[in-house]
Picture (cartoon, rainbow, N blue to C red):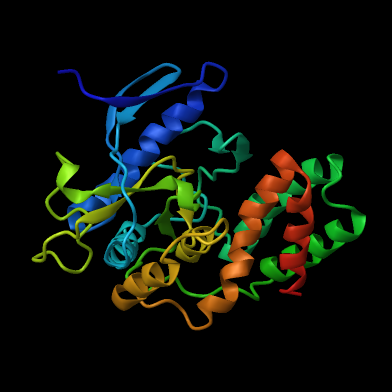
Length: 286
């Protein structure tokens, strides 16, 4: 029987699928040490990518806690600098249909400078053009960007991350975690998804990462992104994470700050109320 796969085609931007393939493999490396499950690449070529079809089921509180712990080990895979692409990739970055800045040489930027310059502000011109953000809203984002560049919000990575940046998924909204019966997953490393509990059995349901926008980033960005569009058992994910890799003090107050990037991307692509929501969140950090 032939393997069941999810077949993705992009002839207009074939490099986006190359980035996705390399990103999946990059995020999969920490599975050997307990990192979260990552969908397996089955085949690839110019303009197409096949990934293993993941059976879907409902999340449970146990699955959420285990996923949080495993995600901490994924982040601990690390990156040498903010914006670093997966090894071997030299093309443009993508987050869905939006371009995403990747940094190919270490420019020694602190996190706030990177986040302002390469994540929030590139989305402002298109959001102004589509009318979702007006000049007064742009001024608020520019003030926040300056505070970020000044390092006001720079804090250490979570405890398990020993490198300057974490290895992040980069687009970790709720739709990019598939919840699958653990018994249906085959050919994964033995420690995949086990976090800090290598001798314990996997829960009956595990979270599987799909569709990344991979780069070196701050681990808090992935955690914040999970809550942008609602994530069942989100607090349990946070608990599982923080139990194995404690976060810097005040991380709960920074969730909205990290969410500004994803909302700004949506203001860029879709306009409408995403722009006002972006500005509203930004105002809270002035």
